[in-house]
Length: 204
Image 1 (spheres, rainbow, N blue to C red):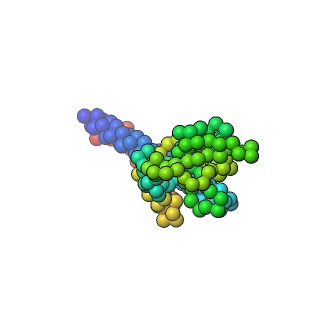
Image 2: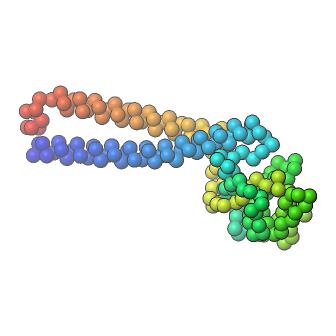
Image 3: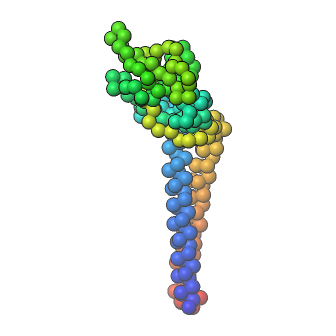
């Protein structure tokens, strides 16, 4: 009975340790990419302030206007990817930045023109009653919209702030310290069990 109890306790410890490992790995798998992506975007925005920063050609954008409602809503986090402007056609949703503008606009293409060897796009927000007054030059296209994370814009903005970055780094640091402490306690317990005489283990 004594040995069975010990085996039962060891089994519970192993299960708890496995669950802890899974939770820790899952949190790291989420937090570490967020941290790396944020750092990449921040560095790129400082190095090339005239361009929208991207990661592997993908630009995450925060939606602050309801001009594309209901397809894209305020506070959504959307993603655009680099695209050959020759492949763009009416109905595509593109993100573009007009010359000298600080913000990026995401609207749907309604018409495509060829002008002086360059492609020009007439655009319109789905919610708007009229088309945009200025044509979009092919060089102003940031990317083609392909996905959105509904309502994630505010959280993404917070995480890109210094306070948000500090939270991510702190959580990763705590996970690391927890793992070190857990491994230390586990190894110490194993050494204590190995140091006990075999007869005590059988009769306990």
